[in-house]
Image 1 (tube, rainbow, N blue to C red):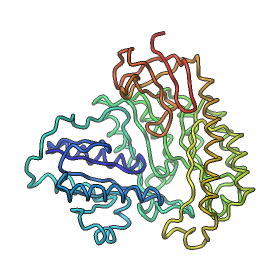
Image 2: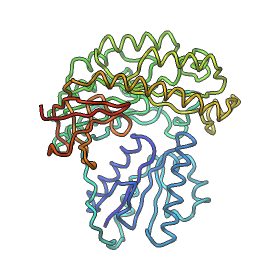
Image 3: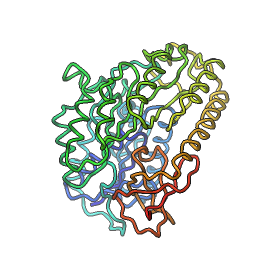
Image 4: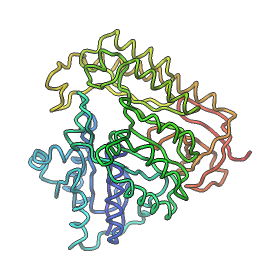
Length: 429
């Protein structure tokens, strides 16, 4: 039996997709996770419900697969994830072609259902999905923050941490199978442990994780600036296998916008935190996410954001335009008063600024020798990443295919050239 799993949205969804894939594989089912090509008669779509564009993308994928089912290209279609968690009843009525909908928390039942009473599916020459490269470890679910624009707490509920023992056992088990790179993620990483241990425990957790034999890289995602646990910085600095990388979503810098967003942090506190992080962990690469066009964002607020990005020179940055999300404080209390063309113009200006900053930062790496992991062979190049690069969202390192490298292995690479987002290197040095 073969099954395709298509993952939409963020890496937190990928965790659930990989978890489902492992359950299938334990039952003798071959799993493929390639959104470009289907290899079987059964498709599972893990949906995203965060913002309008992501929801639309998930719906379009479902409808595309419904057409394939109608044409006989696939026989069964299942949907899971954030979108169906929030809108299951509506989706069941609007898209009856889907065999069954699952939510954010009951997707494990899907493995039981598909393991019973199914005959053999058509054979293909494609290789089944193998878990290679970075593995995502979700340390908690949900979020207790009340940001005005965010629908995630409405979908996932309150913050619930896994126990340290459970997380560390998972990492040990995976490391013993050869996994070397771990992406540690949560909706709110720095809140970890408060519900169980009554205090922030992210620093002790990562410190213990770094001691596990075979763990080569640990990378941290989705920190929150309010009440940031400063002891985590010592752990990053003192452990060579904890990447000097931190994904911390700041959203904005104007006190006017931050207040309206309910971020519980000020511009002064944000600037002080960034200064502290960079002082405590020399060489750290910060990734942040910013939002433009939030209700009430003035031209002056946006200019303040531009000045902030220009001054901070973030090594990694993403941005998106505000979209009104049903049930959020912003949707219920603010008028979406920024025209779409203004939002897009602001987004374009912000990303253009960051592109220049990224190019300058990359150019300074020319001549340096960096540790690189090889992810894949693509055309004329091996594609790798440094500790400063998270999969799919950050830049990559391109090395000539003539060098005969091995996927999943680490190499010392001399950086020979760069562009706005990627580096070029050789291991022959």
